[in-house]
Image 1 (cartoon, rainbow, N blue to C red):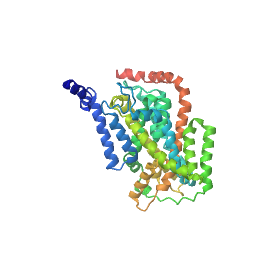
Image 2: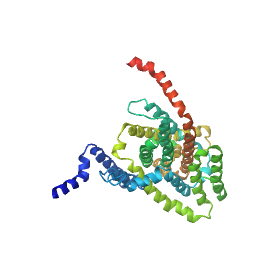
Image 3: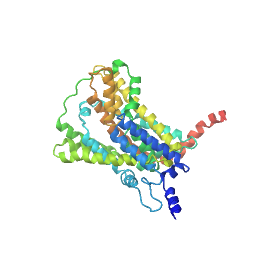
Image 4: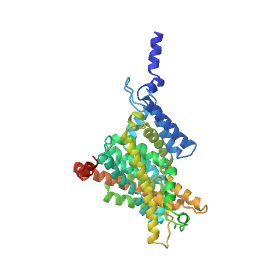
Length: 414
């Protein structure tokens, strides 16, 4: 009896789980989780975001724990799976995050310098390049992305995790885990990814440009702005109003001056709670059995390309604006903040600028394109949600056309 009990106990240990077929994948992903913890704790790379994701990754890869799945013996769901189903799959967490971001965000820099809206728009360029790239990758054996999946992958280029989750939950829920991990990983790694691109595309003289002080923005302007943006969005792009509406509602709580308690809750208690739940849920999708495949690798590669192109587009449009209007120079570094990783991208712009000139303070200027990027990514998401379902019937025709176009070239090499 004792030997049988010990044998049964052995069958439930994590050691056996790691030794079984596929256990190496779980061990590898746990090591990835520890790497993310190192980057967050030792290097300070967005610990509020990266630590919950890392712990979700580690917990979901512990054999026989079923923290992020369903226990086959009892049928009970693990606590992270409950969080995932409740907040990620339903699209609730992204909406709540946008509410908190709105309550924390000052749109004053964007209102004071509306030109920065162009940089926020340009930084969404990577979204559409990644969409095209995903469609092309689907011709590689082992990778299968349809139009819905490609649109979801493209949103990663906006460096906006909540938007990526919201779009994917509606267009390609089967890819939700991989896309969420890619989007949030690149958001957290902004301090690593962006600076080399920014330095490559600018000269030291450009990085030393000092911009004029922003004009003061009145309280009335700050109250009118969220109402105006929501009105325009509701009239022109209703599919984007869940995200835009939540963002503007949170900002209105902050700016109206008579809902301080609600604003404080949205900025702190609500935002922190949802961030913990969302990070654990996203990290849980790094489970080895679902994560280590060609589709996931393709998503990670396209996400990186899209994010790099979005950063580059923001910098280049700022340089172009200087050519058009040399009397009011813009430091091109703030263009990189057009990706909507708020406020990480703005802080990186300021940091790189101070490397060239320690007395050059770009943070408030960079917040203009940064918050414009948030709006831009939500608008791009609305466009995807509105257009992609109606283009789906054309997808087989498009695939056939591409195959016909490349068939002669393939025949030559065969």
